[in-house]
Every structure is written in structure tokens, then in C-alpha cells.
Image (cartoon, rainbow, N blue to C red; front, side):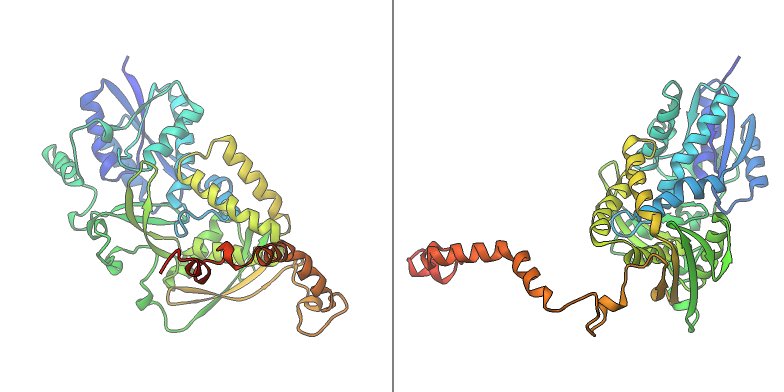
Length: 419
């Protein structure tokens, strides 16, 4: 009886090549699994392509709801942004895909799981660690780490030699990944950081800022305990809400970033990311936190946000550290409830008002007019105590005199030290 291999199948160039390659190099039956996290895909055509190229079966797993609720929302609440720009679209989806692959491998009795991540990319780390977390006994096959093909051109030639239709145009051979949260683009002119990205040719979810409307649009997002629940007054579940904001944000060219990033494997890479709805949500969520979190909590959460982004980016979703970071974040979100209004205009997002029943902004205290809760005279004693270390140091330096050199420059010169 032939062994079974579950393949993470997308119907793109890599996985189209992998099916015949696996059949040529392993005595196996291939079970193709397509994990639907909201990517634009004709699943009927993709399923037929898998079967036509040699898969024994092909299954579609719709996990959009789970993706949003269990992966996107924790990243959003955490304010996780990798290297100040990347909203972790691919990074949040890969752990879930790995989990689904293991579920299908168990169901099918497969002894191995294959994926199309390259030996230079981050996704191999995310897939491998995700699979390892649930199935340390299952073999992982990553053809890019072992086969003789070196480029996308080699892959195209491989398919053409075998008479297999190439699932892409040679002139549009960006390496892309998409889901309902984002779309990434790599390759072609992006491989030289000195080149400007060809946005009009590249973008799929958004328009370039130049092609956005000349009139601004206002959008309001409502949050409950850190989670978005409504857009412009209309209650929506997570998947519907993201699609709605993608449409609004995409029309105004927001959420496009060009990033040279540090990959997990040590090299730098360049990508252009489209996250129109996500950019709006991250902006709104941050505005609400500014209103609802106290100074110390907000300051500490900034460090947690950075660490959470690094953990997610590095494929460490299913770890105690990620659980602990998210647990802290969840506590901070208890009061992050309210409404945020924003203005979208030619690629930009601007705040246009924020309100919350848990607002820590107190007009009586913050107003320039003296209120009952704040006495200006109190500040003198506060500043005296707050600056006590500065006072003590100044008195010490004054007592030692100028020859101590503590202030550098002129004092040192007077002793003939410099000149």
C-alpha cells in the first residue's frame, strides 16, 4: 500500500510543480488540502488542477472564521506590527494552515506533510514549527530544500516539459500570498531596493494613492474590549467586517507598505504589502488605546506589542510565550471599548474623533482652566520630588568644583588636557 502525503495546496506555481515532483520521487498517494483563509481563489478550478496534475484527492477547508477570531484578532489587540510596518498577514495565517494540515494528515492516515515554502523564506519555519507542535511524529517534506530547481523560471520550464499548464503569466510572476487580511508581493523589480515598486501593475486589493478619489471619506469603527464589532454603525462579524473595510480602504489606497525586512533565517528581503482594512483597524485600535489605557499600562504594552510581533513573525504561535503575551494583552483590553472616526484620503488615515465610556481623558483636569481636581500649586512640590536625583547630582558636582571635568570641554582644557 502506498504511503499518503498531505500537501498544502494553493494551486499556484510552487504547489502545481510539487504534485508531479512528489509522484516522481516518492511512491505515494497525494492528498491535496487547500486551506481557505479568505484568499481570492476559484476553488473549483484549483481542485480540478490538483486532480489533473496527479493528486488522488483534493479537499477545501474553510477556516476564515477561525482565522479571524483566533489569529487576526489576537494580533490586532496586541498591536503587533513587525519592524514598524508589517501587519503580519502571512505570519498569522501559516500557524492555522499548519494546524489544519495536521488534522487532515491524521484523518487520512498520512505519514508525511509537504509544503511549498522555500529554503530561504520565513514560511518554512512557520509551517515546520506549527506541524511540529501538533505532530512531532509526522515527516515534513519541503521540496525547495531538496530539489534541483533554482528559480521560478526553472519551475515554469519543469511544467512546460511535462505538458502541464502554467498557472500564471510569465510577465506577472510576482511571488504573492493573500488572504482576507492582506496580500504580499515579492520578486521582479522589488528584488532591487533601489527600484520604485510598480504599484499600478502590482496592486490587487487597493488602488495607488494617485488613483484614489479626490474627496475624502469618513469611516467609523466601534470596538468592544479591543475587538471591532461595527463599521459605520452596522454590527458585523469578523469576516464580514474585514471585507467591508478592505473595500473602503482599498478604494482610497490605504494600507500599502514597502518594507525591507529581516527574515527569520537571517537575510533581508523586500516586499510590498497591501492591508487596507487591517491598516484602518490598527489605526483605530491604537487611537482608542491612547484614550483608555493609563500611562504605565500603555508603556509596558508597547514592549509586549513588539515582542508579540517578533514571536508571531518567527512562527512561534503555538508556544507558552505567545500564550502569556496574549494573556497580558487580554487584560489590557477590558476597557478598550468605544468608537473611532477616521478620514481616509489618498493613501492616508487621519483621526477624526474618538469616544469611550472608559475614557481616561478628564476635561476638568486637562483643561487650561483650573478645575476642582487640579491645583496648579501642587505641581511645585511634585517637580521638586520628581527631580530630586537631578538636584542631588547637581549639588555633588557643585561641591567637587569645575576641575572634576564632569562637564567636559572648557574645564578639561584649563588643565592642559586638550587643546
